[in-house]
Amino acid sequence: MNTLTLWLARLLCLVGALIIGLYGWFWYTYQSPYGYTSPAAMEQSTDGPHRVFVYGTLRSPWVRWLVTGQRLESTPALLPGYRREGLDLEVDRDDQVAGQLLAVDSETLAELDRYERLGVRYERVRLTLARGDEVWAYRLLEQ
Image (tube, rainbow, N blue to C red; front, side, top):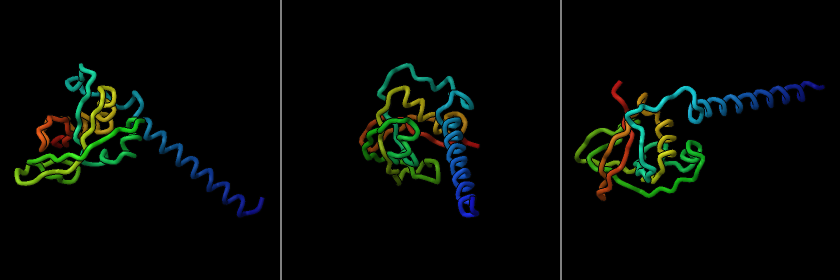
């Protein structure tokens, strides 16, 4: 085996290991039953639909598909009285946040909760959109 072939074989092994490692991390973090327990206080007793306002990474259909394994339809929405501050919403009565509105069942809501690390990193709160719809939104927990 010449040097170039050996180098390419090693590179392919490294890339394969990296892909497997990233998939394993993603599965453990966002899909597995290990490593995260949903707060009991946020358990939902109804099947939905639950309306969720998203303003960060979950605006992307690709991210929503990775998190839930399904193509979630969304509609543009505005949240008045807040401004986006990094990864969070801050109260600002003179501003508004543009985002997307999702309608999901309880199982999908639990998947979104897991992605947002409900109870660890974020809390899910009830807010009212500009058009009057009451929705769930994720806000960073105080550290």
